[in-house]
Length: 252
Image (cartoon, rainbow, N blue to C red):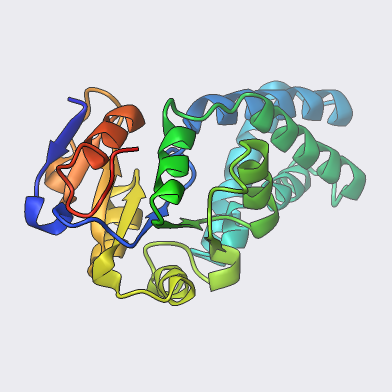
């Protein structure tokens, strides 16, 4: 499966803008996350003088505590808070220098292992050439997500970026979708949403009447998610979008 249409009526006409999720939509998240977490754990073992399993357990417990404390907000994803609380769980009280060092290690390693999915940049540039607006709705803090977009060289590809920090809530809450739609200044029916999460992206966007496109990993079936289109290859999405099958789009 490269591309499957579940609701052709919803995606027959070209959108005036497309909103994108970031993590696991524009690039694969799990590999860089695993590499970054491993590098951070190794450094914590060295700096704190405790075993790797102790560090791993403390960071996992800290993540659960932070998320429970903060709910679905941008700061609930903060590695800085996870590492601060993890060090405290290990009985070392608050260690600001070490906490900052671990956070920088995590994100430096994370970015060094990130790679855009094939075809993402070409698709974005083709949208721009055809006058189709672009935006991002992404969870997490603005500074981190801005860094990712710049690292990928995509800062010239989006008209607007909305983070859950700016909106005050994570997807699928209404606030980030409403803010992005307001920034675009368009009727929601003329906007599509591309994401990887059936609830956060698809359900959240459907609440506003957006067309929904779900990026799935190859071999996974997203038919039951309620999306209008599912795809596993941006090159195939590009070919479909600019093949003349979508009314009002040129061939670029």
